Length: 368
Image (cartoon, rainbow, N blue to C red; front, side, top):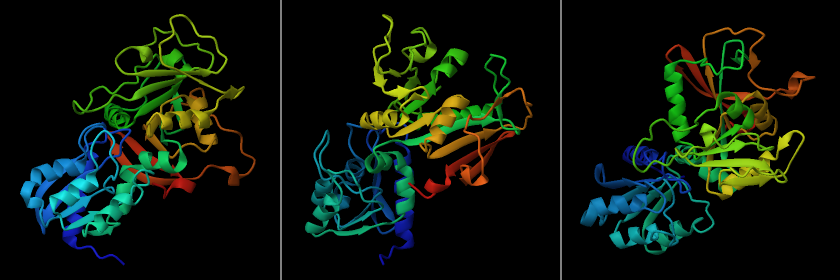
C-alpha cells in the first residue's frame, strides 16, 4: 500500500483547487493542477487554463525555476507523454530535475495511458500514484466519460415546486425558484461544454441559454444544442443569436429553410424523437465532455428513460402549484414499484428559500 504524508495531502488538495480554476475553459482537455514543493514549502504552482495553451506542469515549473531541482511535483492527472499543440509534460518534469512525482490519477487517453508514468520512472524519478484519486476523477468526470463510455457526462437540470410541478401551463415562462437558485444555475452552465434543450422549450420560452457572465477571458461559452427534429424553430430565435455558438439537431431527412443557421447535425430517429445515444456520441467526438440538459418534461423524461442521465441538478422551491401545473417529467407508467428509477443523494444545498439537490441514479452513484 502506497503511503502518503499529511503534507502530501495538503499539496494535492492545493493542486486540485488549482485545477478547478480551469473548469470553465479547458475542454476538450482535462482540468489539471500542479504544485512543486520542497517539503511543506511550495516553490511553484500552475493549472491548465485553455486547450492549446501551456499545461499545468509548465506553469508550475516556470514559477519554480531552478528550485525545481530535487523537489516533489504533485499533479492531479498523469503528465502527458505525447506532443500535441504543446510539448510533452513528462519530458519537462525530467529536464527540471524533480526527484519525485505524485500523481492523483492515471490518464486513460490512449496517447498517454501509463506512458507518462513509465517514462518518469525510466528517468530515475520516484513516482507514486493514487493520492486523492476519487476527487481527481470527479473533477474530470466528463473527460473520463468520453474516453471510457464514448459519451459525455450528462447533467439534467430541473426546477420544481413541492408538489413536483414545473410551470403553471398558461403558456408564459415564469420563474419558480428564487434569484440565488438562478445565479447558481449560471455557475453550472459555465462548467458545461454544451447545453441541450428541445424545440418545445425554445418555441415556448425563447431562452438565450447563455452564461450571463463568463468567469475569465479564458472561459469558453457553452455550445447551445437545440433538438429540433422537424426544423420548427425559426432562425430568429434567441438561441441562434451570435452571443454563443449554437447547433441545430434535426432528423436526417428533414428539409431545412434557406435562413438555416450554419451549424447543423442530422441524426436518425423515430416517432419518439431523435436518437439520443447517437447525439451524445456525436457531441463526445466534438470534444464536448460535460453537457447539461435544460428541457421540458418530455425531453427530460426521454433522457432519464434511456438511462443517459448521470446527475440530476434539482432545484426545489417552497411553493404548491396544484394539479393543473405541468409535471416534472414524462415517464412511462409503472406497474410495480421495482420499476422506479432510484437515485442516491449526492449533496443538498440551501439557496435562499430554495433547496438544490444533486442526485445520481443508483447504478452510477459511485461513478466518476
